[in-house]
Image 1 (cartoon, protein in one colour):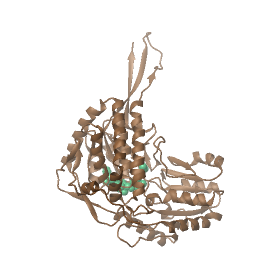
Image 2 (cartoon, rainbow, N blue to C red):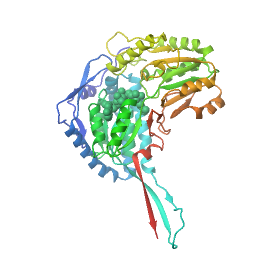
Image 3 (cartoon, helix red, strand yellow):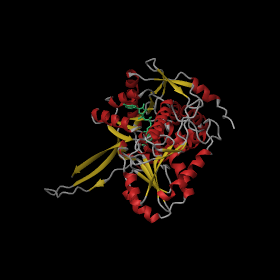
Image 4 (cartoon, rainbow, N blue to C red):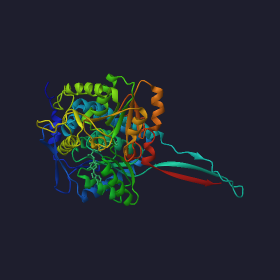
Length: 495
Ligand code: NAD
């Protein structure tokens, strides 16, 4: 097989002189600083975007404040139908968006089509449905009245204002959609700051947003380095930040937000997610589970598993069969439809993964499979299986965010639970067993925001998602996100 043919509109989009998306249109940035967008498949520069400066940030915030005035007064049913229209437009332009996404992120084209377009449109429609269902409560006040007067009370859920959505590079379209859809369905306006590595697709989606009927200023996109995100949070005209990214950056974002007059913050951060294979697990299902949990999109998924605990008497068979499956994976160009395993998204990340392989060797872990960078153009690493010596080994404690599954054997299931919880993070975890009753008793004892049984990584817009411990604050999806994008106002009436 070979690479698919790029659509002419994709090349034309890459060739544009990209500015920022402010006030409903593309505008040139005030400064002249540019950022190269590099293809992970061949390390070539494919496009350039602007690094916004303080004048650009002021303009984006002014636009979003104006957009908030209009959009927050737009009837919920209209908000809902505009977001539905945007989902339809994303699907109509699906191949174009998928190709741009694969070019900038190295994600294999099948994943771009299925997740960055198809799944993102599904999430958008789910959020669109909430616009017409946001309610308060009617409350009978509890205290006795003094002179026979009566009281009644009710609550209102009101949009928080201008939201800054800061997005990482791993699912740059879908995560941007989660943020803009949460903001827009609740009546907020939004400024998206994409990752400097993957800024392109959302610039195109902003245009589709206008076509769908968003008023000018409701959705803005400001490209740039991390400092641009920081300046947006610090700006007195923004009210909330919804951040997805690494733990150290998330902690810095939280401090900035609290220091900026208690700007509200939702933090969706990284993790070091565990898989527990129980003693009775079917080995073939466990192998499929390890592939699903650890290797989809080269492990560059926040909820992906990196720590695998398996019963001592079954671990060798499990690792051998997993290695055979990984050996058979077709590694290649992400634009080739037959490729099963593509590059990682940027050179810095590839080098970081190389350093993890060195660390594993220095700590005398056994490299069961892989463990090297791949010598070819672009940013490729081998899918890797490692056997650790102890729960203290670096590969069982530091987030690699790559295709590295590190295993440790256990002797009894109480020990397995303790090992799974022995981490400062708590984003996700999974249990694999035929004994559902046993799994159900273990679920409440696992310290993670999401626990899967006999599955891993699948996110559904109806099911809340977010971290406990050092993996974050707040929840996306379900009904839970509404609390984070609205303020609760109480109204009391005497009569
Ligand atoms: P990152 O933290 O380096 O960057 C994320 C975003 O923050 C980028 O847009 C970056 O420009 C911006 N940024 C950097 N410094 C900033 C600052 N001081 N103030 C404001 N913004 C700043 O993360 P990354 O390398 O892009 O993404 C990988 C990380 O994201 C992994 O740790 C992964 O686990 C995490 N992640 C978490 C989730 C989740 O839902 N919990 C989802 C995807 C990725």
